[in-house]
Length: 431
Image 1 (spheres, one colour):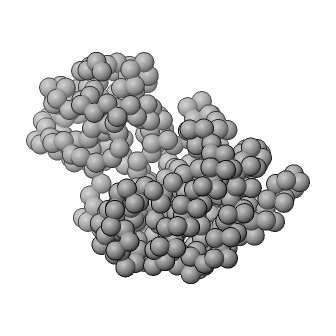
Image 2 (cartoon, rainbow, N blue to C red):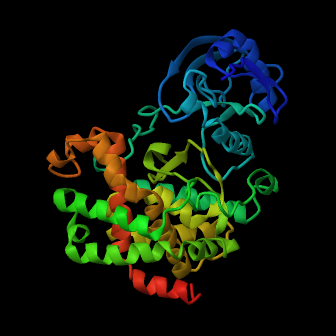
Image 3 (cartoon, rainbow, N blue to C red):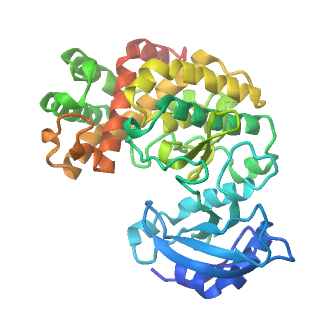
């Protein structure tokens, strides 16, 4: 691939660095120009110096770095600790291939500078993207995890180590509903329709060709073999012969109705809104407000777009442990509907929202999660030695623990739903 050092952004028209070395070379002078262009820095203020700059690892795309800066004149709204995310990774072709994912994230970062934005996000100091080359940059405040009242960062798939699981998911659901409801109320202006037009096919279907019903049947057999050989990993009914028989019969049949499912998920414009599609706990930070209520900010806005809110709810709850689903899901659904309406969105039909959520979970689960047995075994060949889902053989490997949790959540919802009745409604156009 051809390495570039600087490109001119499509949004703000400023030349910006494509990698860490170029940013360091641009120094405080570049940061001053950038922060003024974004409106974060007044014309009579400046970045006086970069005190520290270091690259950090993490994420599946681009390169990242942390900056510590000083300003000519400190102001209450200015942060000294900053996070920089590049869309490009010129040393890794696979990671660099995902560079286009930052375009929407940049658009959202600039949108978040609107006054009274409905959700807390990392303060945007500069963001721009060059579509022709897929080169982008995002500079935000660095979240002070574990400091100044902010809770430590929580890792995906380790909710059992997080205190007050329900309180954290309530905070996430409120944030999702506030953004979606505020958009439906028109409080974000017409920028959303221009920058995030609704794409009916986005985030509802697999990027690859969908599996045939026969292929789904083969993957169901992979799950049954894994669950039979490792019953300690799948609680209760998910390891029972009765559920195996249901899944063998129902999963291929549901897959044959996938085009009808997609039509249904596109059919209710009142349920389509701007959403974070992956609001797991590791994409948020938490603190308690003045009233002692747990609240959160959301980060990592890659793939942000307008979508059916049911997609966003699954994106949030998919890595939650089963007690959240089995004991608190109804209340969380009620909370979303209430918060969505209080922010100006229409009153959503609870029955319809639940149906759309179930359809989306079933469709996405068949598209992706039935591959999990082979994925987990490849990532952890000694999986059979794990005594439970919380065994270190699983919890020490993010891919394995996340795959197992999401697979379990998908199958648990399937087991608790009358899928025959749902499919009958699909077949007769009654959904």
